[in-house]
Image (cartoon, rainbow, N blue to C red; front, side, top):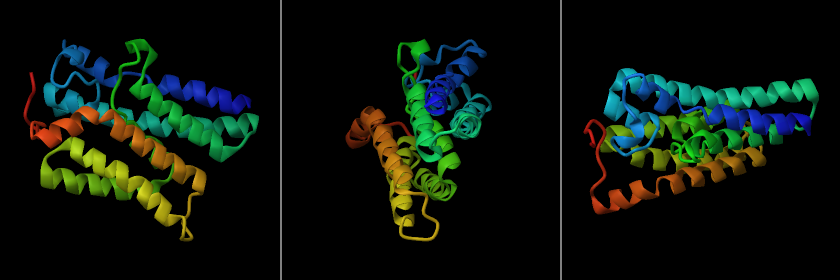
Length: 207
């Protein structure tokens, strides 16, 4: 129980580090007042350029990986169920990114951080989802559409692998489904703009 409690708390705090906000502030920009107003890597990239956005993306991914690794270290140190502790830590990290206590619970949409936690939990389905993301983005130019499709592909790939020798376990696959749904919910405004034809393609600044 101690490992579980510490994993949830530690992962939430790691996830809530607003790298996008901090990176933009280093350039004198309050990212919440520009572009889409989101603190995630996509908006930082669009407003501040790739030299600022790329490190934010990498750091947001890494904090997801770190949360899973932290949970595994705590299980080794204090005992407990490794799979469920890792899942709880992963979810806490994504929630921390999406609803950081430091910013009035208004954070990013959790795509990069979700990628990070799943790279730690289930590398192969994550790489499949990342490949699909890259293809959809290349074809459409929409980061949001690519993220939504990847959010569907990840749990589908994880569930499909349950019937192979590379299965990661139903608890992890179920978590992939929940996390995918959370990403979709966080993209409600993007979905509305995509349907209306007003969503910005990547590379165009929104002021």
